[in-house]
Amino acid sequence: LMTSYKKKFDIYNIDTAQILLTEDDFDSRKRTKMFQEIIDAHLSNDILPIVNENDITSTPEQLFGDNDQLSASVAHAINAELLVILSDIDGYYDKNPQDHEDAKIYKVVTELPKEALNDSGTPNDPFATGGIVTKLKAAEFMMKNKRKMFLTNGFDLSSAESFLLEGKHTLGTIFESKTAKEK
Image 1: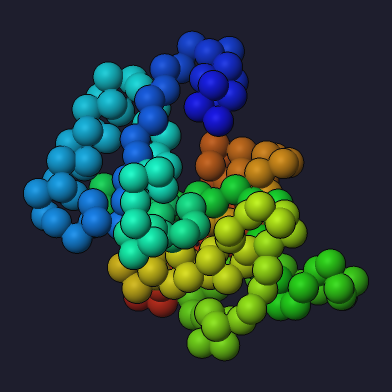
Image 2: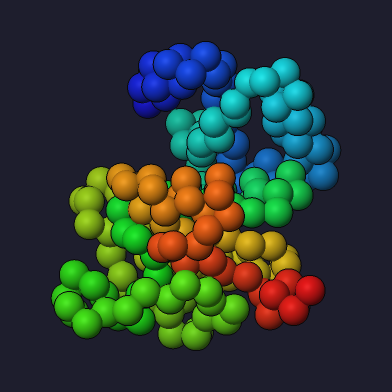
């Protein structure tokens, strides 16, 4: 995976480095501070840190189990204002768009219904560990910590580009707490 990232980022002369974390890295102030400093050092030296779960050395109790919740924990720990999750869907819908042609995308979500966080939504890929529920749990975590999350399609980056580079929200879902939205 890192070889693929390196090849893609080499096109733009962007250096990358992998940072492997476990859930335990967030349970210790010392360890959390250490990875915060590592990420800051990489960024200040124009190196893009690519964070992934260290599932090789982790016990089952130490695993996040999905990159959505890991990314939310990292975003919170490094005080990021915004977490962007690129997915195989355009955003969060009122119902499954694969099953319902009339499904409508939510552009802004300030509160998630509890049943959505307990839903048994499954990923489309049999090797995936995520799905919409893990994205919603990450969004809930970000909103509780008064931060934003943007969920959009990673296969068609036009909505991400529009939102991130031009400030135009054309497609995708922004999750933000009610108090953050009122500011």
